[in-house]
Each structure stands twice: as structure tokens, then as C-alpha cells.
Image 1 (tube, rainbow, N blue to C red):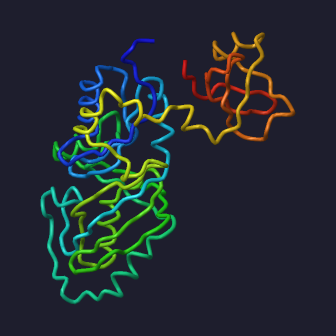
Image 2 (image 1 turned 45 degrees about the vertical axis):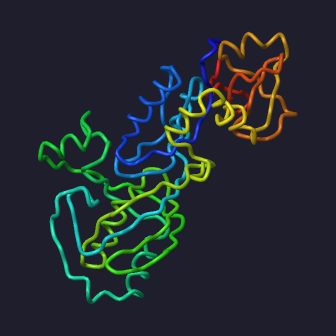
Image 3 (image 1 turned 180 degrees about the vertical axis):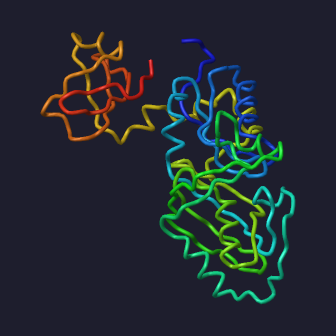
Length: 294
């Protein structure tokens, strides 16, 4: 393996003004490595946790994107924009002087649980092969289908009307700026997102996130900040193949499920030399490759 090849997941603090792709491009330059990706887009004006995938960990993009996320946001009531945040064109303004804190709290907390959220036009979702944001910039609006999202938790930190600062833990695919918009609509005054910080993705917390400058400073010892794929999946049961079956494992072939294996849907699979090779998924009496890390 090349000396400068890095494998694993690194917790990056995305600063304001960068797109997620900008962060990947910067990381490629710092680490002198092409095989780098990320696990979930953050808007340029948002800051916070962006897990960056290095080398063999790039195959985990879909898995990390599927994980729940936590945010800290500021909702500005009384203003609606085309982007649902303050960067957009103002569509309408409303007087918020008659709003009562208890009513605002009640409406915000009413979004706890599942609700059908209409994806915003200014998003990376694709319709007919084109990103919604590109269509929006062309002045087009297309029909979108509402999607079921789950708001696991909302903690209201401060209410200083017309602003509300809150924390939220949400499922994949949830747009916090759309949540802000929807809260404003339910309060009949409109609303948009003023600021957003992503504080957690899965087990990656903002307290351990590194800025790009810090990564550059720590490049010589950056392996200390990278979580290996093996460590990321350490909670899964471990299986070793016998020497006769190493070639099947290395080729990504199916393996036979033995009755004495610990019951689980997913397994860490190692070869007979105790080298971590893959995550396999149990299907009936077989184990099938789920993610390969060779």
C-alpha cells in the first residue's frame, strides 16, 4: 500500500462558505490522495460536522448518510424566502408582535415524531436527472412529492422573538430550513432559517471535529485522528474464515452461515490471518458480501 494512502473516517468541521465538495477537494490537496468522499451534504452557509471518507471507507457513504443527525439552528419568524433560509429572496414579511412564546413552543413541539416534509426547490435532490437547485436557478418550479421524515427530539434553547434557537435530532433526508419554514407557516407568520450548525452525525460529534487548517497542521500525525473502518464496525460480531475459505472471502463470494455464529444481521469478517476484509450480511443460511474493504 502506498505510503500516503489513508483509510478510514475523519471528523471534519465544515466552515461557513465551503460546500461539502470544496472540503473534499481541500482534503485531496492536503493529504495528496484522490480517493476521498463525504457522507452528507451541508449547505455552504451551514457549519459543523462533516464525516470525510478516506480510501477504503468511501464505500460507506450511503451508510453514514442514512444515520440520524443533530443540529442547532436559529429560526427567524416573520420572514419567508425562496430558499427557506436568509440567503434567499424575501417572498413575504409579517408582523410577529402578537406571537406568544407558549404558542410558539407548542407549534414547534408539534413537529415531534413523523411528518410529511416537502423537499425545497433549492436542494440537491434530482427530478428527471436534474438537481432541483439548478431548476430553481432557472426560475422553474417542479412538482415534488412529500417525504416522511422523523423528528426524534427538539430542545428549545432560547426564545427571543422573532428568533428561536433550538436543537433537533432528525432522520436522514430532513431539511432543517424546511422545518423552520413549516413552523412559520403553522404560526401563520412565515419563517426561515437564520443559521445552522450540525453538531453530530452518528457517533461523530462537533467537539472532536477538525478544521481544514488543523488537518493541515496535523498532517504528519493525521492517522491519530482517523477512525479505521474496523474500529467503526467494532460493535459487530467477528468471524474468521479458515485458510481453505480465504480465497472465497477475498473474491467477495458468499459464505456458509454456521449455527454457532452469534445472531446478527451484519458481521465483521476476517481471513485466517486475522486481517479485516469485509462486512457480510446474513441472508437465510448464507452470508453475502455487504461492504468490501480490500
